[in-house]
Length: 314
Image (cartoon, rainbow, N blue to C red):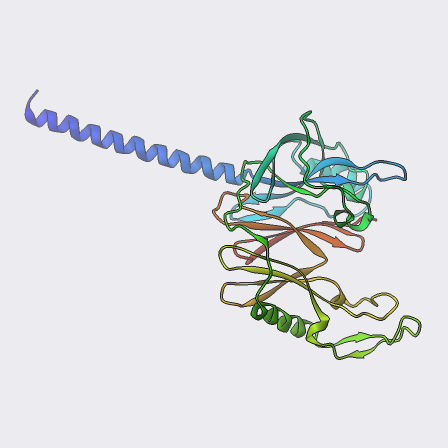
């Protein structure tokens, strides 16, 4: 073989190797894209019995699916109880889930969507079909019972891909006085006027000029990237009930690394944080905990995007 022929063979080999390498990279990228597109997010729940005397039971609720760059809630809207019979066809029939909490893999379970939902509170529920031990964190508590006011186990994130890490490392925190003051200022902007009563017996609403010390910090979290979360609510209500005033219920705010405060919502609590779509950033999942209201809210892409899965109990 001549020198020119040998050079041609070597050149062809280099081109072929590069082409195969590019093909492998493209195939890996396509595989990642398909896996991301098929990601489903759920929650392992402990559900109270629907009737008196029934014990609580464990199940998984499918809540969000990844569509493009965003998360989309599975359908929950119904016109009547009759829709509960057909709604399950919009949900995945069978699933294998990775159960996660605080950036850790707690195990895997399989589940199957119910043939029909008997109650609004069952929307999205899948019966657990695996026989391994069901992951549990902590003890039963009224904190997780929501509208049912029944002690149950803590809900845990369930994800269809093994994406359980929390790269931003969200943890409970004590925020600095500067950050708390910034959040309180935003609270005042949101609730410039509130009312209160002299006492429960009189129960007559009057304008109330509340002070900063009346704005109570309930919970706070921070990430290693300098983001913070805080829940605030007014204390000192002297009425018989809350008279429909939202200021007395928990109001959540997020504070970015530059100190800018943004309102997130009310009647909710933080379930967990994790990179559930393998994007390199954490999403935060909140449980909706309101009167006759349940479900979940997901905040992602540095709190610029959100999705909500919600239902009522009756």
